[in-house]
Amino acid sequence: MSQRQKRIRTGRLALHPLEPGHADAVADLFAAPEMSAHFGVDLSDRSLAEAMVGNRLAYAGPPELGHWVLLLGGRVVGLAHLRPSHELPGGLAEIGWYLDPRRWGAGLATEGARALLRHGLDELRLDSVWALVHVDNTPSLRVAERLGFLDVGEGRHYGGPHRVHVALPGRA
Image (tube, rainbow, N blue to C red; front, side, top):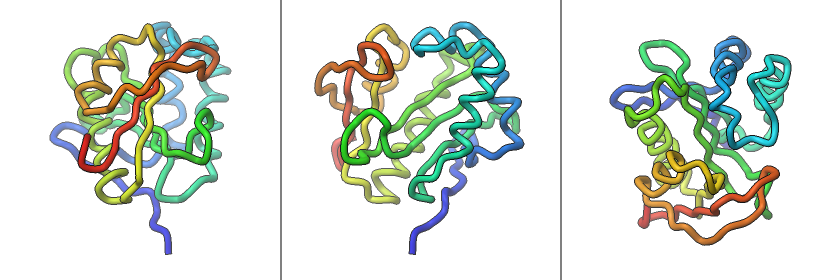
Protein backbone atom coordinates (compact mmCIF):
# COMPACT_ATOMS: atom_id res chain seq x y z
CA MET A 1 0.00 0.00 0.00
CA SER A 2 1.53 3.31 -1.03
CA GLN A 3 1.48 6.31 1.24
CA ARG A 4 0.18 9.75 0.48
CA GLN A 5 2.28 12.85 0.16
CA LYS A 6 3.16 14.01 3.66
CA ARG A 7 3.64 17.32 5.39
CA ILE A 8 7.24 17.99 6.39
CA ARG A 9 8.56 20.39 9.04
CA THR A 10 11.99 21.97 9.33
CA GLY A 11 13.35 24.49 11.79
CA ARG A 12 11.70 27.40 9.98
CA LEU A 13 9.55 25.93 7.23
CA ALA A 14 6.49 23.78 6.77
CA LEU A 15 6.28 21.88 3.48
CA HIS A 16 2.67 21.11 2.61
CA PRO A 17 1.38 19.25 -0.43
CA LEU A 18 0.34 21.71 -3.14
CA GLU A 19 -3.44 22.20 -3.09
CA PRO A 20 -5.83 24.36 -5.15
CA GLY A 21 -5.99 26.87 -2.29
CA HIS A 22 -2.27 27.62 -2.81
CA ALA A 23 -2.66 28.41 -6.53
CA ASP A 24 -2.91 32.21 -6.28
CA ALA A 25 0.00 32.51 -3.84
CA VAL A 26 2.23 30.30 -6.02
CA ALA A 27 1.31 32.23 -9.17
CA ASP A 28 2.12 35.44 -7.26
CA LEU A 29 5.61 34.07 -6.48
CA PHE A 30 6.35 33.73 -10.17
CA ALA A 31 5.31 37.34 -10.90
CA ALA A 32 8.89 38.34 -10.07
CA PRO A 33 10.90 38.30 -13.32
CA GLU A 34 13.85 36.65 -11.49
CA MET A 35 11.73 33.53 -11.03
CA SER A 36 11.57 32.95 -14.80
CA ALA A 37 15.22 33.69 -15.55
CA HIS A 38 16.00 30.00 -16.12
CA PHE A 39 12.68 28.83 -17.53
CA GLY A 40 11.88 28.64 -21.22
CA VAL A 41 8.78 30.74 -20.55
CA ASP A 42 8.10 34.04 -18.80
CA LEU A 43 6.01 33.05 -15.80
CA SER A 44 5.60 36.69 -14.80
CA ASP A 45 2.72 36.48 -17.30
CA ARG A 46 -0.07 35.60 -14.85
CA SER A 47 -1.89 33.29 -17.26
CA LEU A 48 1.28 31.26 -17.86
CA ALA A 49 1.99 31.06 -14.12
CA GLU A 50 -1.58 29.89 -13.49
CA ALA A 51 -1.22 27.23 -16.21
CA MET A 52 2.05 26.05 -14.61
CA VAL A 53 0.33 25.74 -11.24
CA GLY A 54 -2.58 23.92 -12.88
CA ASN A 55 -0.18 21.41 -14.44
CA ARG A 56 1.39 20.78 -11.04
CA LEU A 57 -2.02 20.38 -9.40
CA ALA A 58 -2.88 17.78 -12.06
CA TYR A 59 0.09 15.60 -11.02
CA ALA A 60 -0.94 11.94 -11.30
CA GLY A 61 2.26 10.10 -10.35
CA PRO A 62 3.07 8.04 -7.27
CA PRO A 63 0.99 9.51 -4.41
CA GLU A 64 3.91 9.84 -1.99
CA LEU A 65 5.67 12.14 -4.48
CA GLY A 66 4.53 15.42 -6.01
CA HIS A 67 4.69 19.15 -5.35
CA TRP A 68 4.95 21.03 -2.05
CA VAL A 69 4.60 24.66 -1.06
CA LEU A 70 7.19 26.09 1.32
CA LEU A 71 5.47 27.98 4.12
CA LEU A 72 7.20 30.45 6.41
CA GLY A 73 4.98 31.75 9.18
CA GLY A 74 2.01 30.32 7.30
CA ARG A 75 2.79 32.25 4.10
CA VAL A 76 3.82 30.67 0.80
CA VAL A 77 7.46 31.60 0.12
CA GLY A 78 8.39 28.83 -2.29
CA LEU A 79 7.53 25.75 -4.25
CA ALA A 80 9.36 22.43 -4.47
CA HIS A 81 8.87 19.09 -6.12
CA LEU A 82 10.02 15.52 -5.74
CA ARG A 83 8.46 13.54 -8.56
CA PRO A 84 9.26 11.34 -11.54
CA SER A 85 11.33 13.39 -13.98
CA HIS A 86 9.85 14.65 -17.23
CA GLU A 87 13.38 15.01 -18.59
CA LEU A 88 15.30 11.96 -17.40
CA PRO A 89 14.56 8.38 -18.46
CA GLY A 90 12.90 5.65 -16.46
CA GLY A 91 10.86 7.72 -14.04
CA LEU A 92 13.91 8.77 -12.03
CA ALA A 93 13.01 10.93 -9.04
CA GLU A 94 13.75 14.60 -9.68
CA ILE A 95 13.84 17.36 -7.09
CA GLY A 96 13.45 21.06 -7.75
CA TRP A 97 13.06 24.19 -5.62
CA TYR A 98 11.85 27.74 -6.23
CA LEU A 99 12.00 30.49 -3.62
CA ASP A 100 10.57 34.00 -3.47
CA PRO A 101 13.46 36.31 -4.52
CA ARG A 102 12.78 38.49 -1.46
CA ARG A 103 13.83 35.47 0.64
CA TRP A 104 17.03 34.62 -1.24
CA GLY A 105 20.22 34.41 0.79
CA ALA A 106 18.61 33.24 4.04
CA GLY A 107 19.18 29.51 3.53
CA LEU A 108 15.49 28.71 3.06
CA ALA A 109 15.92 27.00 -0.33
CA THR A 110 18.62 24.77 1.15
CA GLU A 111 16.50 24.04 4.23
CA GLY A 112 13.40 23.11 2.23
CA ALA A 113 15.27 21.11 -0.40
CA ARG A 114 17.25 19.26 2.29
CA ALA A 115 14.02 18.21 4.01
CA LEU A 116 12.55 16.97 0.74
CA LEU A 117 15.77 15.18 -0.20
CA ARG A 118 15.93 13.45 3.20
CA HIS A 119 12.28 12.47 2.82
CA GLY A 120 13.02 10.88 -0.55
CA LEU A 121 16.23 9.08 0.35
CA ASP A 122 15.61 8.17 4.01
CA GLU A 123 11.86 7.74 4.35
CA LEU A 124 10.80 6.70 0.85
CA ARG A 125 14.07 4.81 0.29
CA LEU A 126 14.51 6.06 -3.26
CA ASP A 127 17.59 4.68 -5.02
CA SER A 128 18.58 8.18 -6.14
CA VAL A 129 17.29 11.72 -6.42
CA TRP A 130 18.25 13.84 -9.41
CA ALA A 131 18.42 17.62 -9.79
CA LEU A 132 18.64 19.47 -13.10
CA VAL A 133 19.98 22.98 -12.53
CA HIS A 134 20.39 25.57 -15.28
CA VAL A 135 24.09 26.29 -15.84
CA ASP A 136 23.57 30.01 -15.15
CA ASN A 137 21.58 29.49 -11.92
CA THR A 138 24.48 29.97 -9.53
CA PRO A 139 22.37 30.09 -6.33
CA SER A 140 20.69 26.75 -7.13
CA LEU A 141 24.01 25.21 -8.14
CA ARG A 142 25.27 26.17 -4.67
CA VAL A 143 22.19 24.64 -3.03
CA ALA A 144 22.85 21.36 -4.87
CA GLU A 145 26.48 21.45 -3.72
CA ARG A 146 25.53 22.18 -0.08
CA LEU A 147 23.09 19.26 -0.16
CA GLY A 148 25.82 16.85 -1.26
CA PHE A 149 24.64 16.24 -4.81
CA LEU A 150 27.25 14.83 -7.17
CA ASP A 151 27.64 16.79 -10.40
CA VAL A 152 27.64 14.11 -13.10
CA GLY A 153 27.60 16.18 -16.27
CA GLU A 154 25.66 18.54 -18.44
CA GLY A 155 22.71 18.09 -20.74
CA ARG A 156 20.00 19.99 -22.52
CA HIS A 157 16.88 19.91 -20.34
CA TYR A 158 13.81 22.11 -20.07
CA GLY A 159 14.91 23.92 -23.22
CA GLY A 160 18.38 24.93 -22.05
CA PRO A 161 21.76 23.76 -20.73
CA HIS A 162 21.56 22.20 -17.26
CA ARG A 163 24.03 20.62 -14.89
CA VAL A 164 22.90 17.11 -13.98
CA HIS A 165 23.24 16.19 -10.30
CA VAL A 166 22.51 13.02 -8.37
CA ALA A 167 22.12 12.33 -4.66
CA LEU A 168 22.55 8.76 -3.46
CA PRO A 169 21.64 7.16 -0.14
CA GLY A 170 24.51 7.48 2.30
CA ARG A 171 26.30 10.03 0.10
CA ALA A 172 24.09 13.10 0.36
